[in-house]
Image (cartoon, one colour):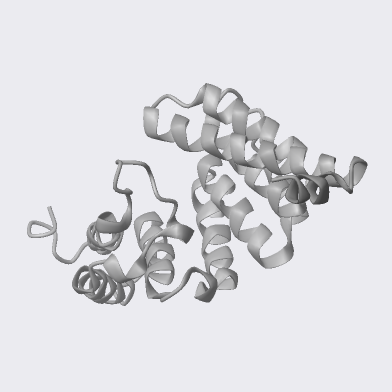
Length: 212
């Protein structure tokens, strides 16, 4: 398609997006085929040649006129790909791009991603507030519960986070998502149990250590 429409900035934006996302493919799954979330991926395994190609194509596309949906999505992917470590991610820039994309598309899934970016910039309460705008439109979809669980975990409400991870796992329609969310529910629930034990039985762990 790009060969047929070489001057179409949105076609170029779509191809740039595909290149920038495909660059992460080597790090996207673990040794057992499990999904590896973006913040936990080994970025040294990303294909930097594809990143450079996608970024160059995006830069050329943006210089041709009005910016469209695919160019914005590619811009967000490029910001992620430029970060050598997850903690180096330019979240304010990603949030600004998601705000533009949200206004352009009105897509509730974009709002979910915007909520995560808002939480990274302004704190989890900001992200949770945005979720209220898409609750009805995304009712019954696992992504809503998954994002809510993540934001609640960021806020320190591990009990509610575990409940929403479990709800998301029950709604997920593919096995890798289901397994990942169920694991998060178990891990978060375990932290709740440990916190409960430390609060109400502060000497229990010391006794366990003594009698091992």
